[in-house]
Amino acid sequence: MHARTRTALFASAAIAATLSLTAITPALAGTSARTTAVAAAPAPSQGDPRSTTGRVADFYGAYIDSIWDNEDPAAGANAKALRAFYLSAAAQKKVAAFEAKEHADGILFAQNVPVKWKVDYTGSGAGHATSLVTLTWSDGTNAEVTKIKVQSDLQTRKITDLAAVN
Image (cartoon, rainbow, N blue to C red; front, side, top):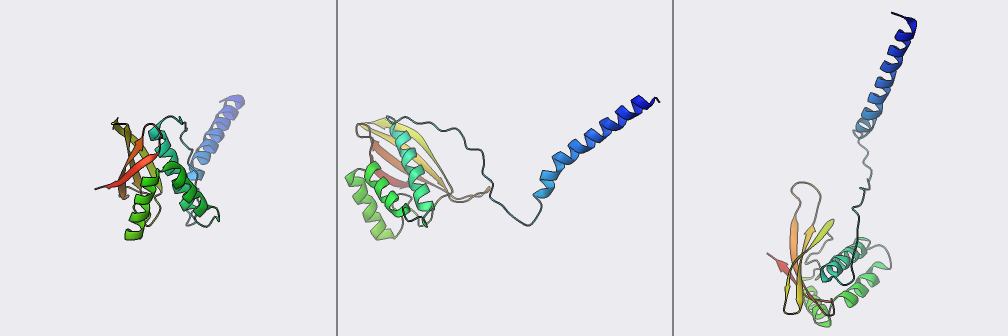
């Protein structure tokens, strides 16, 4: 075998070994007992202020962010302001009555904060649009999920009713 061919063969083997180690090293690094938070690449977001379902999604996203960060001094005031902006006066009264009776958050129908949320349009009629909010309470394959039916006024786009779905 010529020296040039042998050198090229060894160089190819070295490159292959280096690429293999590069692929394996991150996987091996994940086996340590130390856990770190990893930020997933966010899905692209978009919105339309004319969409009632989009406004429900905006409200739930901002509201959950506010109460998730409950140690931030502005969080409570922000959650209150979000309710005032996105909910009709009647819906605000209904939420307050639920909270007084159940000692739980009347927006989430729970005492804790979900880790994920999703909003789907389910229909419209008689001047209202209906959305289904799905709240996920933990990660994993057996995560608990609850659903909330949200009705919005098509003219004002304000949330006019919320009801837990059984």
